Image (cartoon, rainbow, N blue to C red; front, top):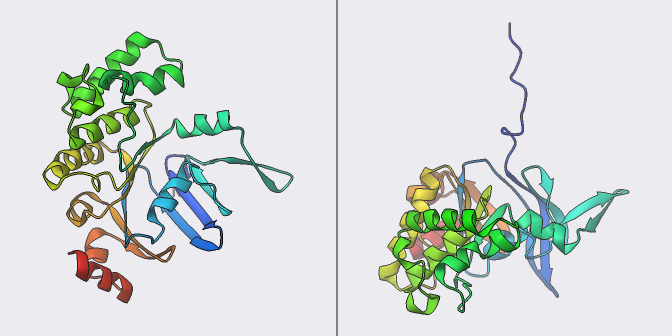
Length: 263
């Protein structure tokens, strides 16, 4: 009789957080968060403003340095190495190399205003990865086609709508061929009529198997696209489960109170 299948790297969670704590001065923002995200999973983090969602997201790629705990992506400790039983922060060059595997899309686009759409997308592959300009340009054009902006390659960000700028930001994040995409409230700065075009691109990424962690207030998106929803409050994950479990039948009173105001 055959024994159990061996555990492989593909079976391990892509993202693993253990005991992550973060404080700003005397304010404790994260209280020992444990979290795992499987490859191909779409995790939506929901909760009131100030609950620690964005800080948790930023700890994943070391934009915020945890005061305690560890973050692993693809089995690699992010931001630190262990020597002699103690953690030592990596040199910024090595941290940048780790971040190259983790795409991030912010609330406010953060495009370079003096660069065209195409130049924004090829900036990191050519400067960080030293990719030759010609293949980087071909890949960037394909990504811009994918997000519906193939006709905007020579436009500057100021001439684009907010939704278009955010789609450029997504293409820029994908240009580094990341294992993981992080979205920090990607539609919160958009006019309501522009939200759908950004969510459509994210739906396409999810359907293609991209692993995503999304901080969002878009409950409809979470219900439709997420494989798992985690509710945060006071720097802790109070409950998590399928969208149906958390959004339709929450167990925790604080989750029920929050959802009663947003659904």
